[in-house]
Length: 107
Image: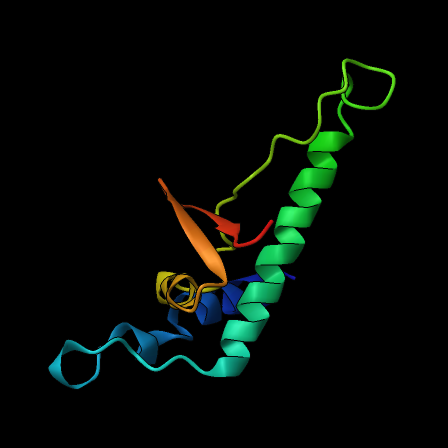
């Protein structure tokens, strides 16, 4: 198990090494559409789970003061580099809220 975790950590840290270089004239690196799709799906899943976790706390619900979920934005999953999140912001799927927090546009 420890060896597998170490190798996974190595892949996560160094697997996207080609994405850290920019193309000609400082253009952003090309990110495969499949990776963008998987990153967006992972982001939405983490946001949903964070909201469910927040709602499951005491004091939130129909019989309490009526407070709804207060989670609007989250830190994106670390499995994908910042360039992926910047590209999703550029495409209009996510909104950068500042301080490393992102939210889904239209929610």
